[in-house]
Length: 168
Image 1 (cartoon, helix red, strand yellow):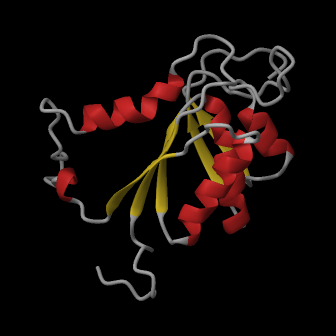
Image 2 (cartoon, rainbow, N blue to C red; image 1 turned 30 degrees about the vertical axis):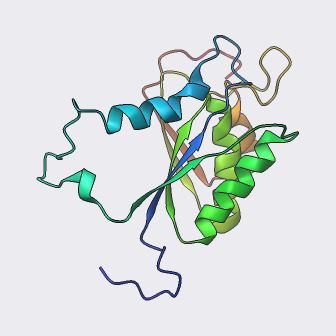
């Protein structure tokens, strides 16, 4: 497919690693996920052919944007917002590899600044709608509470939820 825009990136799918787990209340380790996902995707045991016969390893429009570096950054969420906005402004469609669930809020915040009408399909066992968890309103258990209270999405549909309580 030929692009009609000047920068040539508008059909690219950008892969952005967001190795952050500082808002996880349980175990650390989600920050390792972006690199582990890439290792698995390109391992010798991976079959990159889809059920429709597409060799996903040959997709020319798939570009790895690397990982966000959080070294000595005071405001990690602002760095995520800025990084996602930069990729979106280049015309990329994004696949973000996290990190704990808290990264969802700044990712959606960046998208909402570019797109005026967002609908979210959230697939998870947990609704992540706590107002605050252990005193942290930006915990991994809270991103969708922040997203909806700030009207960053028009609609949130959650599927697979198995553990909800009266607070949520």
